[in-house]
Image (cartoon, rainbow, N blue to C red):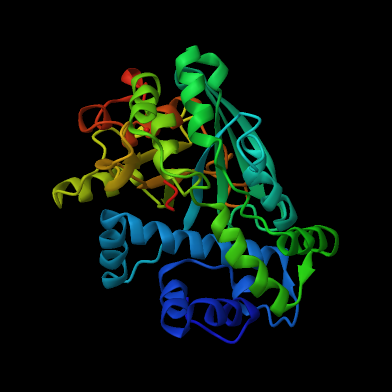
Length: 358
């Protein structure tokens, strides 16, 4: 997709500059109506598309294997259809100024036209996942898969560690942004200047909102839930972004042949219509507070990049909608990518499981 003169292009160029905006237009598949929308007002769908493009770019900056894959795709004349981004949250009241659980994310997605598209129990992880799809362009604008961890299902010591880690959380949504979100929810559009004020705040929502955790708390969380340990260092950053590809099995074989850090097993949904695999998580260095007040640096799992193939609900009918659902078993296996290297290669049958920056 070439850059152009539409309001989406103008919005991105104003926010991130010509070079970054042009690259995002080259990398990502964008619905022609969104790319060509002349404005002058910015629709909720355009805001949603712009947010996903900026979050996708952020993920590439944090996951070297993903950046290399995208560079290789561009060199081969292939673009990326961003299918969904995943975010992890904690279903706990009293996390500083941050709303509990998925509401911290969902409250900014609703004005962008998102609605819950499915609820998925993640029992092995003691979490619940929810997919959110954009109403105006459900197949073309990326979904969000928001998971909530339930601390009350863990030990009292674990729960106390969660409270200590999250107690310093700040709310990234400013009063001005809240007013703009309210206006967008009612009018379904903003002026270009308003959208330019709102988008940087929306990007900050997908970050770590609490301070650096204590090493003792991190170890306590890691012992019972690699997912919560991951949240303690990475927060609400994109856990992964996803390329929707025609044949994930074929791509998996290609990436294995290139010695890429790809999951050994392709996960298949119960319906057979959704197949997923992923790169192993990037390794990142994070700081922790020692018991004596010192700063400890440790390498931990960061985010990763996923690949998905979605078939149509009626396979032989090209007019049939895509299967936009997720699968609890698939999801729990994919979550393993942020655990240790050994378990990152496990299959669904073995599945059990681990960005914010400050």
